[in-house]
Image 1 (cartoon, one colour):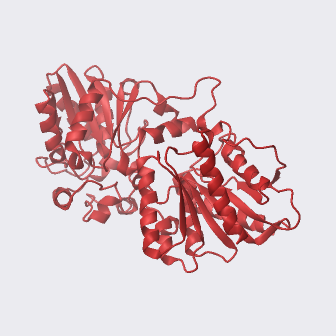
Image 2 (tube, one colour):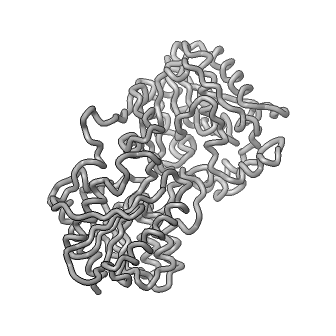
Image 3 (cartoon, one colour):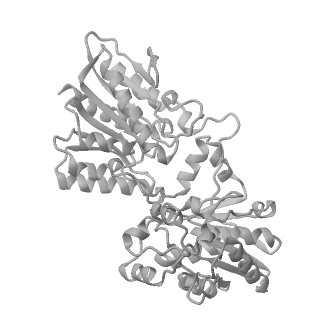
Length: 499
């Protein structure tokens, strides 16, 4: 029989696993919700100096007491740190480690590095004996999406939460080689911003930091809920835990040798070569036309790590859109902005502003007729242009955009929230939005929230739907519907530039 050892995240404890454990036992499995010092309804109070090492030892003792032949260690949030520490000391007893909505952890990492709430970092700088738990829905939301938690459950989470011993978050994890060789399953919570499709795209992008996610010993399962699935979806979580013990789930893969990753495949429209001029971070594609012409600046998504080759302005999608615009008589422009990680949106915004100035200063460009076209995670950069639109900005376009920071991205500056920008705008520019029907759920929700906000402000938004389309479809879908969607979107943008 398989026994599951369930380890809770920060401020919580064994009580959060009550319903999941009951479901596992009903299915014939063993279930043991760990009670660690300072964490849980029956936990002893944490004495000064309680740290990660103490929790690791307590978890090892619990594993040693279990007589079942197969033991699966399950860690949520902070809980993955003692789980991995214990797995390294009893690798022969552990058949699998399950990460519940928490990323892979490297040797020497601290749990604090994964804490998105800046208030925690500030509090730790003062050297407290204990960290007080979040005291409101808004405060818990800074740790992850509370999607699926009703008022009663959230109230209990607030009421039952206990202070966290600081050293459990600040002591580095010692990850042994034996622990890194165990099979893993990642349970991804879609409403918190994670999905298998997202993991696959990170691997395909070629970022060395994410190549370990394609390790064949790792499987992935999803739940359509927030960061606390043991409370919001206990039946579903029990089901995927049972599936993980059997080695079920999907794997992500790297492109085969000689195979182009999706974002480097040819653009869906067959377009002629066009002259390109490179000026700093900007590429210009001038049309064969006399006199100053309108311009469309295409803004890529990301994050795209520094050093990735080719850079986004050489990706077929950006090149294809710019050539297409030039062929229709306007200046196409692309740029490489420095959105290398989620903290770099301010820097990317500066790069975009500089690129706009460069494009408008070119004598072949009509500086009073400019459109900005945002793709994917570049969509957050449109907020400032919607909130305070200059008179020369004739149109904001967005293709399969992310229009709000995802919950697991942590706190974000208000200036990168496009829906909120709609309420601040005076003379709003027209907005053209290319929406794909096969969008990842975590991204689609941001688009729907934006459109709901737009209705409340009477913003001029034209939505062009591609029902069968997926994120980044321009290099994976050469169907007539996909081609027509690109053509309709371009025409909608050019109509606003010409008006």
